[in-house]
Image (cartoon, rainbow, N blue to C red; front, side):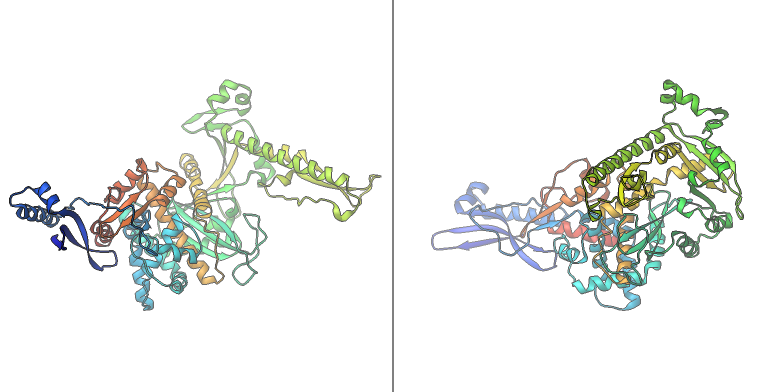
Length: 594
């Protein structure tokens, strides 16, 4: 800090000048404090030894800076002066919390390894940073991400062409990225991979079918070419490994190859892990592979697809147990008839088990039942049935007035278990009752009644005999992988992919994988107190307004979530103003710590 004296013919004014470096590293000076003219100076510092006292004040400011403290910031805003033209003054800052995680997890080192391997010159690290921050906070196209990067505090600067090149390099190193993330994350997280969950989903593309984007059975029921993702997840909800395949790939063929890879690359051979997956993976091949080297499997089993003998066992109301009370059996029919008992056992999980060997695997079938789950499924199916009735009534009403066959309204029937149209049956007749071209729709009550029989039931096959308590706990954790797919599809909008090349599509999905890991880490660091929407919305609203030469003013509502975020970051960004020095400290802190 130093004193600047400006003299004119009629007046002398004084101000304190300070030096600063902006985030680009450019050095400049600014007016720290305007002291006014001689009259104002004497009024503040006294008539005697005025300039000495001014210098003492400046010296005290310099000493404060020398001691590592930041002096108060004086803002002078002129209501008659326009702001500078074409100068961005507002920056997003929510990514600063994600940036700490990015460096804690060593993703910068992963990028450095890729750059050293392929010897390109552009900064892949800052591009990956922006791709991950954008995927979590402002999911959008790669072009929009490029534009968004200019609005982030931190001076991110790269070319759009390098974004697409980055995706290609990420695709080439997809296996290594997963392995290195596993290694780095183990240094800061006590990874719980005694149980590993697996599931598949697919994403549709508005494009023509090609060698990679293939027509298949869409989980979103869209008639477009698909790309399939298989995701492994550990017991704490962290992504563990992934695979990306053409949309027509059989789900059952995707699991074992990836599992072999991570068992080998993650040095997990001989680990007594339990693989848990859904009914789509209920094959002897998958089960046989997962009984080797001390591993175990827990696989969902469709009750409807059991043979008649096992179905009879599952539907029998007698012989049910509750965890922790092995000496007592229950008759569900008796509980159903007694409202008091039903209320008492509404949240309990009942189970029964029976050995049922396949050609190559010795396994146990465990069937669970819950009155709460039964009520949920009944409500869901009743709602679907009502939707089906409305479709039938509407189509039949219109078709009665139709005189030409081409004008008939047709309902596209479905057998999908989540589609209300599965309850609809089509009948073609003439006025005389003969089979012909007129169409009438009816509700197939038998399908509804048959499905109601299975409400509340859940089937599991496993080789972990005599450990029912553990098995049921494992299955209860499956919802986290379903939530992970929902977060990626809905909150991260990972399905909106404006890409066509296979390598870039794979690069896109590895960024989704990394972003999901970062989000889960933040979620757990906040003690799982906040929902996905609460966290993302708060990160979105965090902004900083720059006062040139002075620093940045936070623009956000301070609440419990922001306090918890700052406690995690270790540096406050919610003070009345943040100097350039403090912002630089935030950026330097992560790199130095890692």
